[in-house]
Length: 246
Image (cartoon, rainbow, N blue to C red; front, top):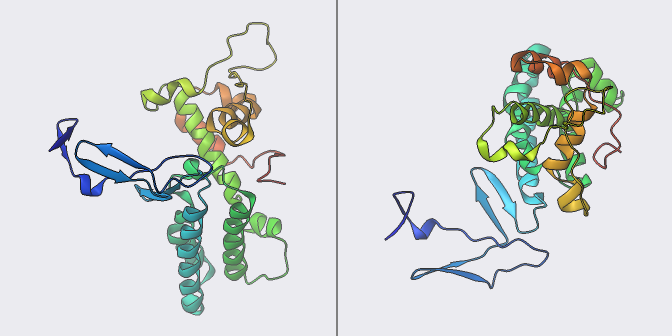
């Protein structure tokens, strides 16, 4: 038997994944007398992780699930008023895009648009508006885009990290800027130097630091998480120039 953390492991449930640009399905991990074959993708706690960390399969799966739920809502929609439709959308369909969003936030532009199109379809049905632009629908519903919603989640996580309210292993992801020369802005963090886009610019360490520094000064200086959460809920984002917003 194999024991980890005083628990007996079941080798039949082991999964192997080797990250890189090429598939490594022929590669196997030898653990004792067991061979764990590497796969192109594995499912961990409800999130499908692929060997390239693109998360295309995971986003495709949640889009299919959300689309099916939206189709069901459309079939029963004539029995419901607008408030009920919004409640069902927010409780069941939108929740698909709110599970572990920071794990797959840095997906490609095609996946970003695929998710936003589902929300657009839902809002057009709920408001019976097939003419207005997506931005006008968001304004009418007082909903943020899914991208802005994930940025809000990132900001909340950044606050918890900086105030040591997150797990200890996350505390070194963001480092406060202790440079006393900077008087104009308060409670900013150091933007890490990166060399690549995939694992540099498109990383939590870099994006969360950049996002935190661009938040309004009163957001960064509040000492209460509940107050910060209320501020973030009413935050509509900024003129972001990242590839997800272009």
